[in-house]
Length: 231
Ligand code: 5RP
View 1: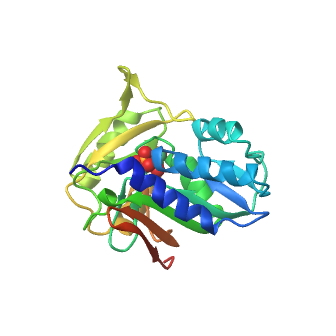
View 2 (view 1 turned 60 degrees about the vertical axis):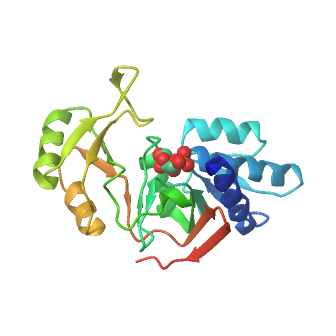
């Protein structure tokens, strides 16, 4: 029988919001899994919980406003108690690939500023190694993107594709473009992240290495929770 992935995502999201306490500032992730979390937080706010959100995309900001969640001005030097977000892949060390939805830059800034980073996935996102089935998104400056792509190809020996939407280059909310790198397998995500960020033109990568504090997985048998250690 086919799994209802959306139900698994929702179950993980409902578990995640149990970690949100009255008065907290919450980093709000982007994507179909994070959406369930924002809606569950909306219910908490309507039941009287005081919290404020830092959204990682316009899409999430719109949803949060609709749900009645007060948002903090993006220009503030915020203190985020917990950031909650989805992921495209999770390896056994809880390293991630993110950026399928193109929000990786804001997502990484918010995750890095949070005291706790909770990652929500359905069971299909867990992989023995990052790469392979999901390309690594890299956010780059549009100026000279072709040369940046060539440098990434040279480093990774992998094909690089400019992300498009409706036949045009996809632009992130920060005005950059995304290169999707089709890597066979990422054996050392930290080393790769460092090497990629040294290439001029690269703004950020979708590798989230050693950032997860808690992984929550929606599975057909129930929700599983794995504490992790930042490295
Ligand atoms: C957006 C992301 C998302 O968290 C990631 O793509 C997972 O999305 P979904 O929950 O829809 O599978 O990184 O930039």
